[in-house]
Amino acid sequence: MQTYGSIIPGGPTLARMLPRAASEARDPPPSREAKRRLAVVRWHEGHGWRVSLTARHFGLSRSTVYDWLRRFGQGGAQGLEELSRRPRNVRQPTWSQDVEQAVLALREQHPRWGKDKLAVLLRDQGHTVSVSMVGRILARLKRQGRLPLADLRDPWMGSRVQIRPYATRKPRDYLPQLPGDLVQIDSADVRLDHEGHTYKHFSARDVVSRWDVLGVYSRATAATAREFLDAVIQRMPVPVRAIQVDGGSEFKAEFEEACRAKGLKLFVLPPRSPKLNGCVERAQRTHKEEFYQMLDPPDSLEELRRLLLTQELCYNTVRPHQALGQLTPQQWLLASRERG
Image (cartoon, rainbow, N blue to C red; front, top):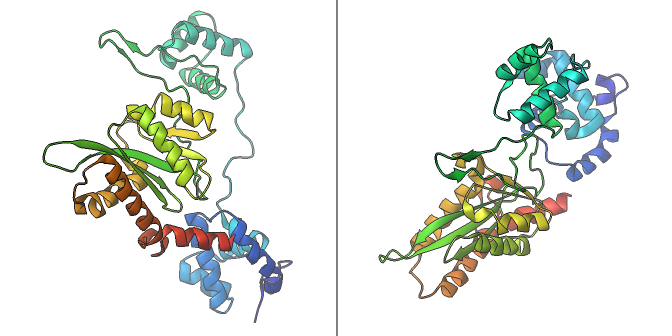
């Protein structure tokens, strides 16, 4: 049998790669692109170690297959991750410090004016600037945290758009890899009788392990959301590192302060984007269909909470989950710990 050492000059043999395979279990789960490339490598291993055959089968060039084999030999599955496409030579600022200070001074004076208007004023001051240059300066000031925020009061509506003191938008490069990296929380109305009495159901779902924590309250306020957050941290089997919520009022004030005090990252969704909280939205549907719609209305909120805890235990330890390969969240967590 051929080995990587014979296919790639100076590359490791298969025997040398075995210890690395054992260490892969401790690495973060590979991305979708790395899994696709890993499938190519596995197919190559199982079909005679023939680079030309592998390239034809997947419609790749031979050089690409050689490159993936080399990277897999050096770094395992992690070596197949997408490499940075950042250019070696990055464009450097072409403006002077005086121009940057002039842009900042004008923006502080007119926080709602954009680059087009500021460029006109800068030219009137004798600076040679283009609109795109002013835009790049504003972007640089924003990245540095030096750009003043505009006053968002609306005197016509008599209200102010609230600026969240702690919550932020989830960065694009924040990708949950391990259980606890991101827990999505949502609330929903629940009506159990014909008299219109409404309860507030809360669901929290870990997006990696699909572990759920459930709660029900008489009202959805910041105080009850904070109480539910304490239950999530207590009953989640892994440390929670980040929370994601929508813009509901129950996830502000005391809830937001509790996240800050506990050192949890708090991500808030943009308006009208529930799909970004898709995991917990699916959890809400599951518990509505499998619990509330099958329930004989209990006599009290305490009895409802007791029954809901039974549903939580069943979901996490008995009910197979399709996204986990028909394992329960508990079985998946135990298997991941054995791999790690």
